[in-house]
Image (cartoon, rainbow, N blue to C red; front, side, top):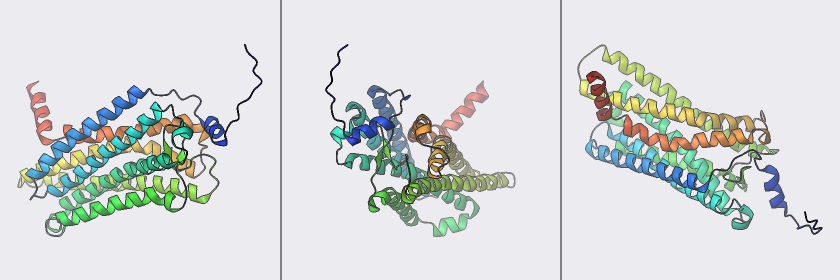
Length: 322
């Protein structure tokens, strides 16, 4: 064993990264990251093709607004998975040496902005879809006369711009996104938070995400109860109701997937923001909840692929035959 007395100088940035690294985290291989990204892209591409075909078919009907919003959600998931996945693969391929390839913190800021946007925007769109269906079922005349495709596109643009604004808030406030403890992703500052502004960003992100999930739950509950009441009162407009049920089933699927995937991460960020738990003590837990959240972008498209009326009808026929 050699005893070399020469000691290489350590930069403050390198020391910070080594001190905050999750010591117990087992790194995912780059091949797994590539497979994960590829599956997400293929799943979302298939869902986009199905939704676009359905949108052309129902373009002039009441279902067009829902399909437009659903297409926007899947497209957002697609680009979120593509951009975030590409950056993550690059980080793994570069051995997570941020000091070498991102001295100016530009890539980290882009990564953080994309993480926040691709997290909040699908949640906002899911709640907007739930509101649209709730109005369509409970106030059909108002929906058909007042809510046009133009209005839906305006609401869609507003939601996207708001998500972009929230993602850009730290940059506008002259704050940088930070490399997280695992050195595989960037987000708001989550360790040694002493400034109210850093705490505000975490709490705002968690609050908006949980609010979107809450709105989706309330609206979907109202829609489902209303449809069940109508189902047992009249046998008229059975075709219209079947389309309503198909959309509500898909909405429930989206809501369940979003709640399961995103709630742990949102609650964790809220806990860190309120200083209930220390980030260093929950580094592995935070990384696990983040990975759960990323599964949302893979599972969302399969809601539309598997919960279509044609697929459900085939499953029902197979069940009857058995």
